[in-house]
Amino acid sequence: MSAIQETVMYFQKGGLVMWPLLFLSIAVVAISIERFLYYKMTDSGNKFASEYRAKITAEGISVAQEFAKANSGECARIVAEAGALKGDKEYRQSYMQTQAGLYMANLRDKLDYLSIIVTMSPLLGLLGTIVGMIGAFSIFNLEAGAPMAITGGIGEALIATATGLCVAILSLCAHSYFSHRMDNIITNMEECFSALLEAETRGAK
Image 1 (cartoon, rainbow, N blue to C red):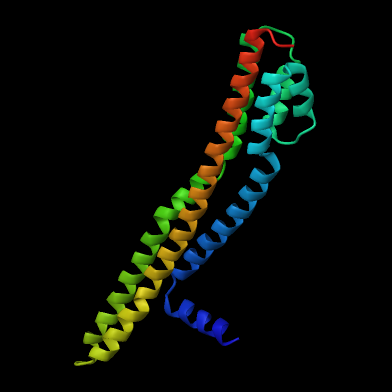
Image 2 (cartoon, rainbow, N blue to C red):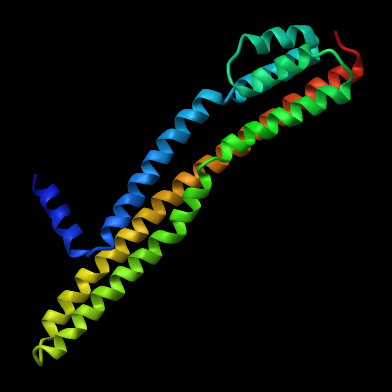
């Protein structure tokens, strides 16, 4: 209970800028949860990609297609649908590129917000600190010789900067995690697409 009271006290001392920082921190958590659930639902996984490539190389397109149908995720869906298409290699390649482009757009969704928060949070914290320091140094206008009051005022003003940096670090970690995971998903898709097109070129059945 004392920790909560202390947190509220620091929040109040940070000034008005703490409210937008609170909103940004909530936004980071909400976006992170939403993106994590979406990635978990749509990612076919490294295991699927490796097994799909092995099956299509050793057993052919039809076996790999059935394997893809039995698995979940966007990569599995795209290669399963592409394998069932009637048409030439260029048609399948065009279909996979279109579907992959739509999926990648969904993967990137909301990640720009995390980038904005990474930049905005420290600036808001700095603004709060500057406003707080202006208020601290204005003590000179009220009473002469109050160094302790000024020092305390600066200390309170720095709360905003510390909070802004914490929000920025949290947002940066989330953005880096999802960017890395997105790159991994894209790599798996490209490898599966290449395996399917190579198998078709070899005339695999």
